[in-house]
Image 1 (cartoon, rainbow, N blue to C red):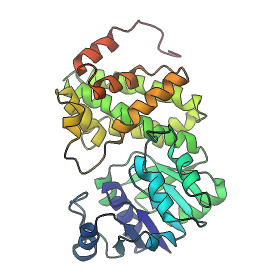
Image 2 (cartoon, rainbow, N blue to C red; image 1 turned 45 degrees about the vertical axis):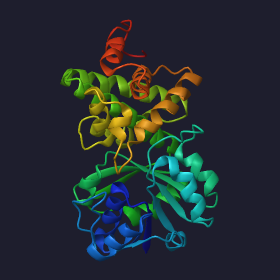
Image 3 (tube, one colour; image 1 turned 30 degrees about the horizontal axis):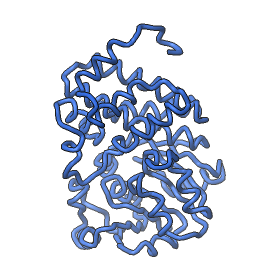
Length: 328
């Protein structure tokens, strides 16, 4: 079976590499003609994943029609472009695995809701979890959540296609929980990067991860996600990874903000997208709409907007009233 991957950024290329690791054929769609040529001739992606030597069974293409006819397609485009890309893909029955983490900025919709409108004939699944692209591409052990809207029947179909010895999916039918974990952790990773940039220490970062996880739980449960899902790979697992390393684009953005750069300066000239910068404002709006207390998310929005410098925002958080930890 041939697997399709839409999006040849670092994560899309890493997933293509993982799927091709057992000799499977993979068609990888890239927007840039020069990148298509490089992947096919040099077996490299110097723009997004320069450390990887790509398997011979990966074929890059600039024609979306080459992917559209496949039965299983991993969609790894930036979250804000998902709807447009899926509309170009065309309608036909297929399994769509959504691998982008975020919330649509203009509508407040999760990726599965965007995909359901743009690709109504497809059966949707969400792939999420603690995954640095360069490690997946290198074949290092990785475990992910695969949330299947089609339930066990879809899981049985997909696990045989995407599981590899070093790439282990775990099943849930909680699509909402899987999506919220992946979206919220990006914003919290920015906050942890700010703590690093301000040199506030490991204690502060650990406290922020714990309190950020409480915000993730509040938001996830309010929108219908399962607490157990958010305690797993796609919630707590991904949160710990991305809040602890400059390999995370969102953490690196936060670190730059903590060191005094503006969001515009920190984001300029980057090949890859720090999705948390797009997710933070709409996540804050949704939390306010539903009266969900998310002070860390609100703080990230203040820093990203330039409303106040990072050190002042952190001081405001530390001055919040003292209260019980559980349920607070």
